[in-house]
Image 1: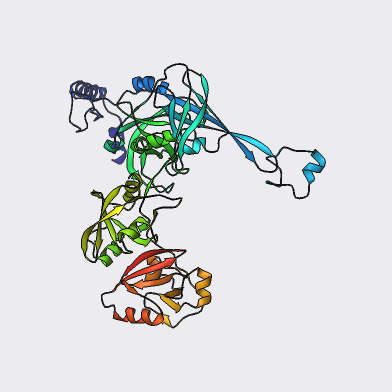
Image 2 (image 1 turned 60 degrees about the horizontal axis):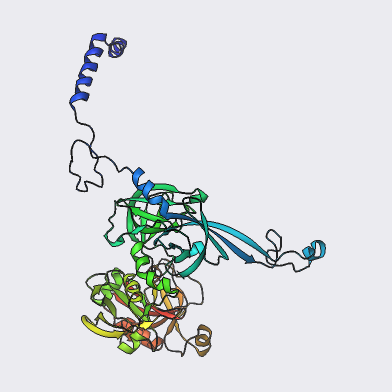
Length: 491
């Protein structure tokens, strides 16, 4: 019976097959085709039977002439030619003895991209493309080459402005508005990956506001348009043919993940780059992000804002009366939703101008007027809130806290070693592995200056404050490596 059923299920009369094919043919003729939602129909509603994917051929043809190839030559002085076993020198005189007067410098070449922003030859690119270059050559789409000179550069945003002098009006890119960019929009990248000139790749905006640790003003556009070495400095276009980003970085292990500087950052800096000097506003504060634990400890409704963990003596914030523990919620009326928003807003504010800062202090908000200063070499510092860390070992101390911490008083010798001005505070001498203290980010060698806003001068102060806490909320002000930081523990 089983064999008969199997046989019948495989061998089907031809008349049945013919009937089935006829039905499938009829269905194929009367059923509508697939519908694709494209940029012309962001709502996803049908616009006729088909909404096709974008055709990039016209865009590519129109945009490529304004994209340039940038090649640089850098002279490196190592004391020895490349490839010698001694790297930067010849301590035994081997090469000089046997090969005579060998060269002490050599040249390296690198490639990048850029795009023309004016008919008279101004070009945007990345600072790392032209940094330390002794010679810069720009090659246009028609294979004509020109020597370029650096007009201005800014390592903190990785932007550079260079210029060529051509005898004709040059094709130029139109700069768009990166603030209006939406995740999911189509984008087009044009550049010279691996030296392959005028390479066009397409993708979408994967994310905005990415912080990748490249500098204090990280605010990258993430895209899945293929970006590779050599694309640096090249443009990222929107579907309207406007530059909305400057391709800058990739993740080595992340295929298809690229990062671009928003064009609005470049547009804001363009006037200063043309003058050859970047001047930024400065408050003189060290800020940190607000974790849920810190928000609870300070009585904040959410994690918005930037927490001041240290203040530069004599700086604008100090003169304005700001204090450690203040939370900056607004700057000149603009909300600070993330810690990184504040440095960017302050940096763009003209030096010497008056500003208003809205702060949260002791459960209330208040506005504080401030005069914006000029950023020195190291101005506003921002840091991530501590997470992880800790350690173990050392001699056990009598002050185990229940948080997995042991502390000791600070002797004059310890204060001198750490670079402290005095012996006030207690030093963390031990952190138990897996404890609440370690998970919060407290580390061996940290100096506790305050506990729940109460000053800690010695071990007795620390014991008293620890025993008075009944809520299970601990807010530490920690001194570490020359700076202070708040750490919250909620049991």
